[in-house]
Image 1 (cartoon, one colour):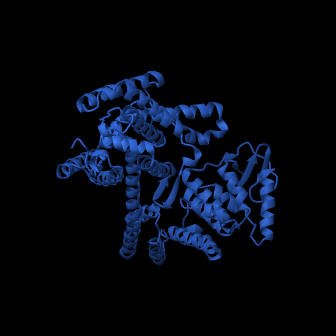
Image 2 (cartoon, helix red, strand yellow):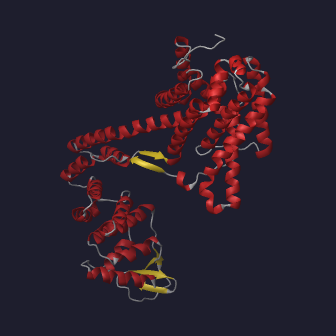
Length: 525
């Protein structure tokens, strides 16, 4: 039986030098009375490191303890034993259930965690410290002090000292409260700042209040760095997304001069291609589901590229050199594509699930966690940028695209099939938009209106960076992302958008060519 196993464990711990003498009175005081009295009795028992307390606390948390005849009984199925001695007992008809409120449960969980502080496994000790953060009080201060003295890991030792200070900040001893407040100034945990702020409101002594106030200032100054780095990371993350969205537009608009208002819908097609691949993996390859994103990347590219090739061949090729007609035509195409997607997939957003290796995040600071999916998008954007740069500058197709862009008639005279190059270039831009949609499916909802939220921003990136300049798109995308997040923290999301737009208008007025001007001159200039 499980409770006999607990008793046997108690005997083993007793041989290792632990006390094992939970008395019936102690067991009763922990289970009966007001929460304050029960917690005081719990802390007193926990400070003795009585191993017999462990199975009893587990039984209390499992609601397996009843009170009868002035004793605490552990009831598991048909087995009834006395909590302190383990002796078999009979359950009376008038036995009462022990009720634990949330505060009492936290105290029980904290006491259980305290027993793991002497585990030989560092991970167990680290988890015990983390579990105790929300339930520690002065009654566990001696236990924490002993654990800190025995701890060999410097990082865990520092955490135990802070935990002890958290326990002593409510001590009736003024000197202990001042020492605890001073020690807590070394914490970088947001919860510590909240704890100190709460204690500041409760504190009556002026000297202690001054010590707490100094610690709050120190903790807030340290946390401010995490907030600043968080804003910077969020801005770079947004900039990477804008860059990824704008790279395709940098080719279709920057190099080819086509104002493609359907660029956002090509991105949407890439996102829905990812959704389809996800469903296929879930249905036919569930064991390999975590790798569906790898298969979705090329499919989203080729699906969007194919749609782009069809658009260029059927509509856009007849509108080169006519920007207004191109704008209106592509806007109409965008409406058609959105309605087509609504017809096939429905008007509601569809769910695209992150694989396990893109879930969670990397905790750099207590108040700064970097999500894995955002880190992956930043890396993906960098890889796509490198690939596009090499394609444009180092391949035969890139040479043809640059040649047709600079002087179409001369390129035709040299034997270049300019119509085919136009199709390849537009398909490439559309395919990159599909890659952007694949990436965006990992950080947000996928729906028919997905592209509408990014089309204006992507045009701003291309225009600000300099038409036809990939380097300019990088600077503009990252710069606008960081600037937007900085302004959001200051003035809110709506005003931040307006201020960014005003900045771009003023900048283009002063420098119409953008950050980077096109080098050289075209034959038509």
